Amino acid sequence: MGKIWAGRTDGTVNKIADDFNSSISFDSRMYKEDITGSMAHAAMLGAKNIISEADADLIIDGLSGILSDLESGKLKIDFSAEDIHTFVEQTLTDRIGQAGKKLHTARSRNDQVALDLRLYLKNEADEVQKRLKELTAAVCEKANEYKSAVMPGYTHLQRAQPVTFGHHLMAYAMMLLRDIDRINDAKKRLLISPIGSCALAGTTYDTDRFFEAEKLGICEVSQNSIDGVSDRDFCVELCSALSLVMAHLSRFSEEIVLWSSWEFKFIELSDDFTTGSSIMPQKKNPDMAELVRGKTGRVYGDLIALLTMLKGLPLAYNKDMQEDKESIFDAFDTVKACLDVFAGMVNGITANTDNMLRAAKGGFINATDLADYLTKKGMPFREAYKLSGRIVSNCIKSGKTLDELSIDEYKEFSNAFESDLYEAIDLNTCVNSRNSFGGTCVTSVEKQIEYVENKIKK
Ligand code: ARG
Image (cartoon, rainbow, N blue to C red; front, side):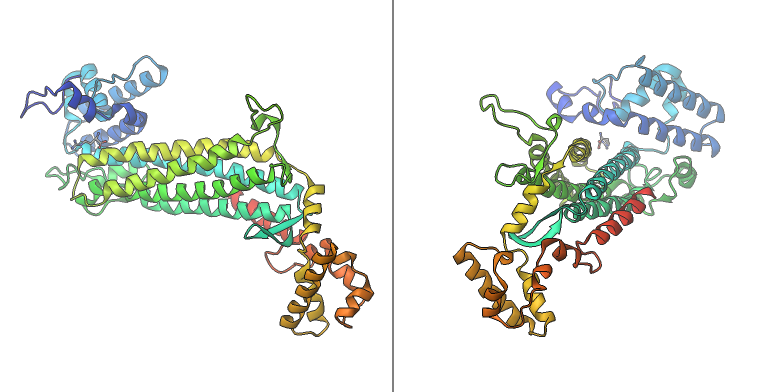
């Protein structure tokens, strides 16, 4: 395709430079947004008598024909065009002649690309939120299944206190809920229309930017035309929200990898979400979780690329900004793929509750409860803590667990111990007496599930 901007030069560009400059290989995915944006622009030009209503109608019909032909496959994108904006405009003029040449009145590719990108990312953000909700629902379902399965809770990856697997899973549900909310927040600043900013300074035509925005279902119009074409904060904000999604998925992945190892054996992944080894016949590898963990770096990279691209750019549009698209598209593609595979992987988790309980019994994770028992009998907590520590140390030496010490042995440490202590340090008691708001007891986990499920229904 020839250059729409041929004039000052004859539009011949060195082949290597032309390929380097071209963005159609990645911006063609915005064809629909480009066309609907152009339709709104043509309608405004007609309504404001900047072009005739007849020309506006011709343009709109022509554009809608291009859209349906692209969707049906009748029209193929010509990758020799510079970008999607020039492809659509040139195809329109090829099809309807003179009227097509009027579409670009009171418009620049600078406001066009900013608009297309906002519209495109709005749909992408919706898609990610939909997937986040599906994953959150899957996590809630698993949490409900295992709301009373006792496992060790960890700090420093050392056994700390007993929790339920359901409680642990619901921690991830809360992260995912914040992710959904964070994208909602970014959307507030995404849905602002830059169209009509033109190249940078606004226009001498009597345009109506609010009319165009309204046609596109956008309530807000950018207040400053230079900012309108220069702003890419929305890409950074969305990519930052996506980076946090990946941070959460990556932490979850890491735990799935650990839990499914022979060392932990807390969970079994379904066969269809694991792979084998080409040489070691015994292997069942958690590749999906590892790949999600690995792809996290990619999305962080996209965020850094966007921030670095913007740093030090003078106002207004600079060609550097063409680099925004590959980064933000890659971030969305990656997150969507990760969320899809994650929901399936979570659905297929089977907990090995016996192993979880065995691990919970082994690590003195009821030592806090032993100290709390003494505290409730009147001993100051710090003293009870010290004494419990001594008892644990003694148990380690004699190879016993806390529930294996006899009451006489306990009494040697303190007369405050009575036979009700065994009930107090029983793991189920430990879990179910942690009934503070947000705690690990079964009813608290049930409340958390209800809370999250209500939020994602909205
Ligand atoms: N392909 C360009 C981009 O993605 C469109 C805007 C071109 N504007 C310009 N003044 N060359 O950023």
